[in-house]
Length: 69
Image 1 (cartoon, rainbow, N blue to C red):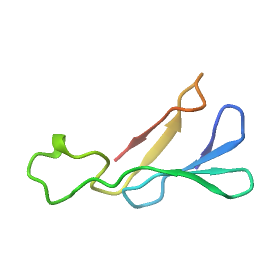
Image 2: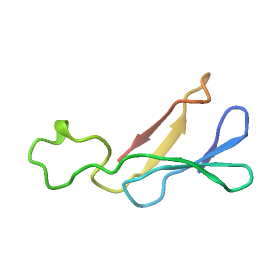
Image 3: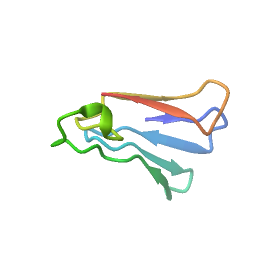
């Protein structure tokens, strides 16, 4: 879990393939796409297909974050 640079959003990377963004009141603002784990070419799917291990916000832009599997 990590707060954005302004502290108004929380990035949560649970042990699933979808990251979630919440506001300070706990309202879910966004959820990343889940990739298709059955497709042969993984480059043709959007999102992760296995559990996330970490995520962090962009150091200057509060609207961008990255996730790692």
